[in-house]
Image (cartoon, rainbow, N blue to C red):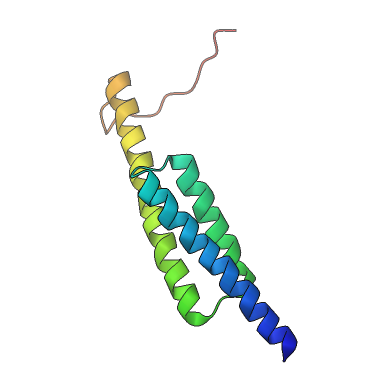
Length: 102
């Protein structure tokens, strides 16, 4: 029984730290970098995969993970659009093989 309580306390502390970190970073900086968002998402996935969270904590972490995934996807889509504009490529352009100048 003591082991179960110990795991619950540890899981709760981990979950609280993840939630506090995400709320703090959002409050301090409205637009976290792609790298920071991806790092947080990876940490969240690791925590979920360990299976130490309660159902409620897991659902909350999953919801946060979905938001982070959408943020990362939007950032990548925006970057891809910028590359297309800068290279003058249209959305239906065919990929070309890379040719090194060496």
